[in-house]
Length: 107
Image (cartoon, rainbow, N blue to C red; front, top):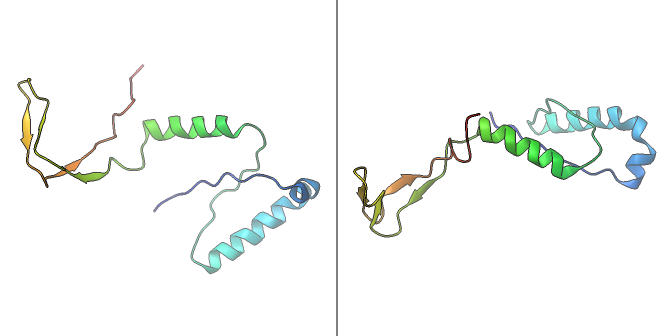
């Protein structure tokens, strides 16, 4: 089942009534349930959104949600040309752009 993370900013009114945040979170859970959505966790945070984005990027780099998008080869192409592993792809061939190891360097 897909999981989504929403990073929301506090409004001035929300900051003034931060003590009511748990009640508002519960109301959001109930509203979401009416449309078939389950809110599993709510974390109230403050601070640097860029830091959160980098942490999520690193987590997804090591455990990606998908293994890559499918694409159609636009024209004839030779993969790994000049090597013993070269492979000719004809235009229209379905290919998978694998991201499972992209940017992954084992320590």
